[in-house]
Length: 342
Image (cartoon, rainbow, N blue to C red):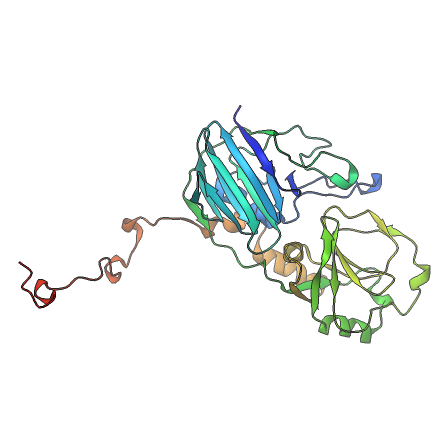
C-alpha cells in the first residue's frame, strides 16, 4: 500500500473526513472537516467519493514525501506549495512521484487548506470515521514521522484545475432563526443583522469569536434561566458579555447561552475560512429560502463537475484559436537598427 510520509507538520494538521453524524445523544459532536466544500472539491478533482479522508491544515501545512507514485489535489485555503522546489497551482491535481517532497507553507487567504490523495487517507476508522476529534480525545494531530497509508485509487490524472467561488475573504452569510431567536427583540435582531463583525483572534475548530464596535447583544427574555440544550455547528451563541460565537464542527453538544440564529450549512465554510481580522455580516433568511438556495447550488462533488478544466488547454479544444495572438514581437528585418537584416 502506498503512503504519504510526514517529514514535518504544523500544529493544526489533522486527518479529516465528513465526521461522525448521529452521536449527539452520546455527547459527541459531528466533527469532520471545517470546510466541507473543500472535501467536495477534492473529491471532484480526483473523481472519488467524499467519504475519502484528506489532510486538513490549519493556517500552515508541512513537508510530505511520497512512498510510491501518488496523485494529489490541493483545495481550501490557498497555501504556498512546492514540489521539489517547483511551485504548484492550488485548486488542482498534481503527480507526486516516489521520493518527491511536497512542501506546503502558510495560508495566503483563509484558514483551512486540504491535501487530498487519490484513494484517500486510509488510516483506521474509529466510530465510523477517520476524522481526528481532538476535543473528544479521538485520534491525534498529524506529526513528524507519521506514515499516512493511502487507499486504492481509481482512474484519475494530474493537471486538472477547478474554478471555485471566493469563500476566503468574509462577506455576508445566511442565518435561519433558531429555537431561541424569539428571546431577542426585533430591534436587537435588526441591530445584529445591520452590524459588521470582525473575526477575533480567538477561535479554533470548536468555534470562532466575533467582535464589533457597537453595544453588546442580549436576549430580552429569560437569558439567565435558559436550560442547557442541544447545540449544533452553525449556531450563533451570545455569551454572558454579549459577544457572538459561531460554533464549528468540534463544538460541544449542549449549551445554555442564548442563540440568535444558525448559519445555514452552505455558508458555514465562509465563517470557518475567515482568518482573524476578516469581516462578516449576517442576513436572516427563512428555512424555505435556505433550502431553495441549497437546492440551487447542488450538493457534494457533483456540483463541481462542470467547473473542472485542464490546467493547460489543448489547442484542439479552443474553438476561437485563430483569435489568439500566438506569436508576439515579430518585426521586419529591415527595422532592426536601420539595417537590412542580412
